[in-house]
Image (cartoon, rainbow, N blue to C red; front, side, top):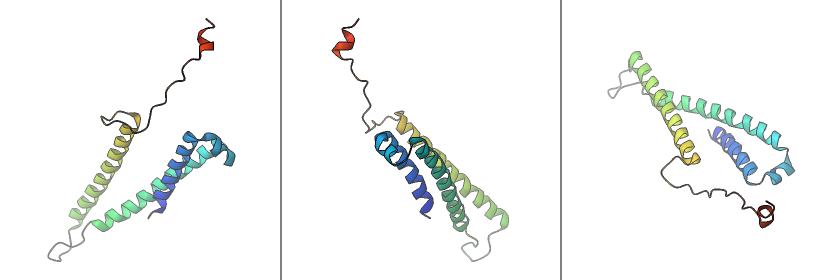
Amino acid sequence: MYLGAALICASLLIMIGLLADRAAMERIMDADAWFVLTALLAPVGYVLQDVVADAMTVEAVPRFDEEGRPTPEDARKLMHTTMQTLGRVAIIGGTVLVAARTCGCSPARSRWPRRRRPRPTSSSTSSR
């Protein structure tokens, strides 16, 4: 159950490592190889998480009503469809919120400091 999340987390941590200290990461492996690894880890992790989520939604739909009678097939299909739709809405909504927060589109201030461009040195300005 946690394997998919661990793969996604590993992929993200590798990308953060490349952004934070590329030289240290390149001492272990070439940056292109790190990128390929993250490009493989994340989708595999998402597929594993999706399989687990699908299995959980199947189990979440009741087979019997409150009185112990079997739930009609049409009603169960509708409940399965609703569960899958809500799951997709949650995934897409979460992705959009994280993307909006990351790009600075959210009204809340980001905790990450913005990189400033290096100021020109006096030698570069005096050579005009």
